[in-house]
Length: 236
Image 1: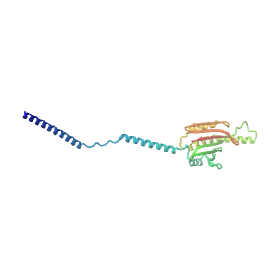
Image 2: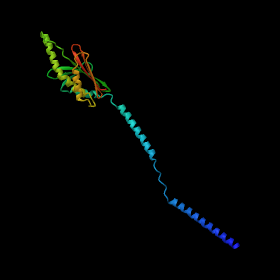
Image 3: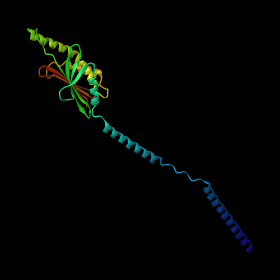
């Protein structure tokens, strides 16, 4: 009986030793594998980086937009020096400053029949903001002249009418685009405005139109001696 118990005890101890050895071997193996396995490289915070980049881009765009708004021209007109150079070097007419106002010129049309027009312009931040041309119009002569005075007046009116037929379209076609810094004012628009202005028949008649942001006004009025046609281009 004692021998049987001793044998069973020996088996149990042997079994415990085997299990203990197995556990020790397993733990040692795990430790070795962990030691040989490299530490994982931290993954960059892509989402945070992308979000930050987006915020930076938005801030940059906002800053550029603000800067653009601050530097945005307040008028479509060219600088005054550019416009003056144009009118003083033209072969179509001669330009002379009129009176004390340095922004008013008398333009003399060098056509077959000589005529004059008055040019006045306004500035905004040193650039042309509006342009005004004033043309004297011939008297409306009714019937045949009865004396030398009436003949002289009729002849002068005929010469002025002939000169205006060339000068008014030519001056508008030349000066309106010359004042436009953007180069977007079309010749077709100018011809349309000119034709409509020439259709005005009496003082008080008015034509007004806006095309692509350019505002044009033409009207007839009674001047000191003759009726006048006034044409204005607003570039603001």
